[in-house]
Length: 83
Image (cartoon, rainbow, N blue to C red; front, side, top):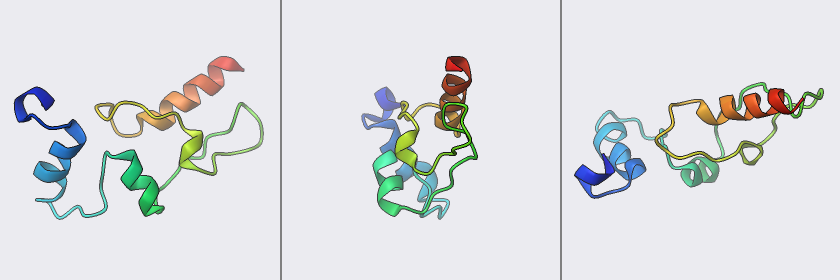
């Protein structure tokens, strides 16, 4: 998509999918999500303890081409794998 459109995937999706559909608060751009501050976090435990995610910065950033929810899933996998 980036090659064909000559623009980053996040930008292409914003302009050609989210905006035309009126999805004003949907974004693949992590910095926009953080700036907005109103996002949902899954109930994943931190390192197998009784502590849960409290902020998006506790989840590793992944490329924007990853499917929705991938950041949370990868974090959970790494947590379980390291336990």
